[in-house]
Length: 165
Image (cartoon, rainbow, N blue to C red):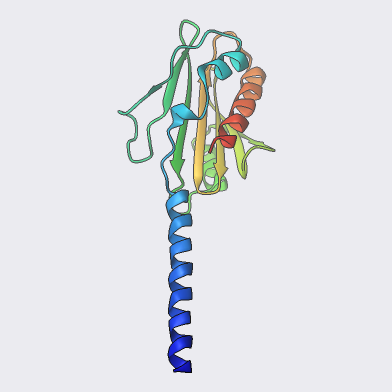
């Protein structure tokens, strides 16, 4: 009888641990609506220009999630994307791949677990941030704004977005 009680307790303990792990995994893999991470007013305040309503781009990489896109001023753009990291996808690996493609990258400290800026050209700035199992990217091209001003705004907005995850 004593052995049966111990075995029952062990099985119940294993089931409880399994349930806890499934709950944690389910929470980690939940898709995040990128349009819920920032408000139009927050983006407008950070960029100092009029910003249109955010719209989810469902035609973009559906497997990775679609970005929420905003129009800035007359012809500028701002977008935020949130996706799960892929197997082995890390900030170091993504930075390395960008460097191979001759895209300028610089580390950004104090944002998420690991972050870096990339400058794909034409005045565009991207902030790539890894936080737990999530990978977020803010992309912006703000007419009349310097690269430094865009990087500051991107960092401030990313920190706000991370608080809502």
